[in-house]
Length: 151
Image 1 (cartoon, rainbow, N blue to C red):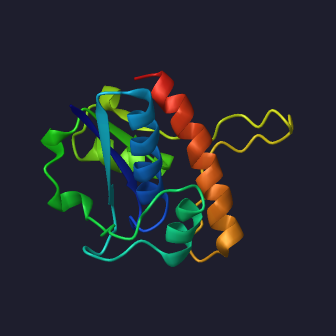
Image 2 (tube, rainbow, N blue to C red):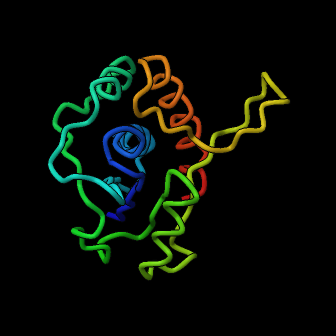
């Protein structure tokens, strides 16, 4: 089974949501992939944020057992692919020696209902209300669906 690592800043919001969303979709599609997550500035062993837990619970997923992981404390040789939640995270991955061909950035899927919405980043909901986390979750769902088609 191949493993991928979602990477964000604190590993309390975006990357753990991406991890459970990816694993659910990969299982539904019978893919031979499994995701984990970490943060470039994470304090190890913290839970996911309450709003992240609630946002994914609303779509039937569970983050209650998630504990943050600090990127430098992980054996990076275990992973076939690294998926950053922002360009800055991708830059950090490349700076620590991850080959560029193993690093991708998770971008929002195009919003077909609003041709003028040109944002590409999945906005960090940290500190926002539950609606900010719901929007982030929905952006991640769309982006992960696109990612899965490329594996």
